[in-house]
Image (cartoon, rainbow, N blue to C red; front, side, top):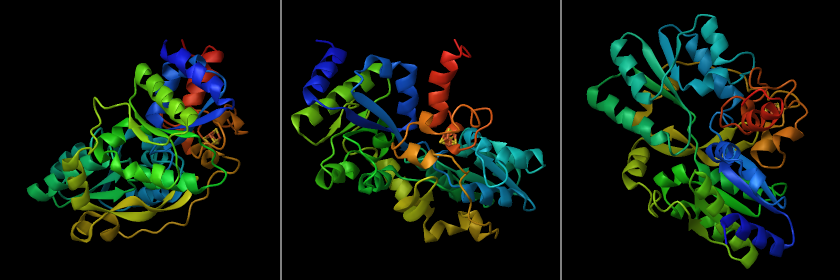
Length: 358
Ligand code: SF4
């Protein structure tokens, strides 16, 4: 029997709709790209989670980086996705248009090269992303230390996935039967950091890869657990993800960073879910060298990003979706990144229906 037929059979035997959350934005996009929603029985509801780094970067962090960009002799570097994220009054693109020196890079190593070439300037890498990205930043800092490139700094808004899952599962409004866990993050951290999902929440979970077969098999494994009343962390992506992850990457990360409480846009403060530089590397934190303060940011009125990131709403439930808020004119951060739930829903559903693509 094929995977889709097996999923159909299991869902029918469940006798109720099943709510599965794909935690990361890469899965959200892959699910749309492969047309997986159309293949699944209606009784499976796929919900997007908080795993899009651009979407969860706070308004205050965007405003702070813009304020840094306005300081003398500062060059800000960041990934392209961050440029259009709305701050309180403007985005990094707006600040660049006003003359701030803000540059898009493809790797933190590009920021290191820029620092070497501009020794009189303070080159700041605006570091976003989860455990997949942060080891690269740690590696770049190790290289900067080795080469004594003293004018490379970071503004870290790096976040970690397991505390966010704990936060969601503590929320009584979040109703999830099972979790499709991110294959790439787990490649770094391994399986053990998810033990609490089973121990404390009895939540079926499957670490899943990103092609169509991976995702369908991950869903099949998840639905089988739910129907059979099990709760395990299974690894569908074993060809890439080892149980103990990548210990060298984790060691590098832990050498430079330590956990701290941070604010997730739309969700709020999540204990120990962020990464700040350890005391011995604080000289690389731009906020210890250049002092700027900005007021707390306001989420745009009527934006439902918080509920979308928690799987309480789907993007189409937001009153602004597709009219006041589009990828060309995003109101909330979930409409900015290609991996944002709202942007993915717009691109693959609304725009397709309107024949804007294909
Ligand atoms: S459609 Fe726009 S305003 Fe609504 S939740 Fe998504 S990003 Fe926020």
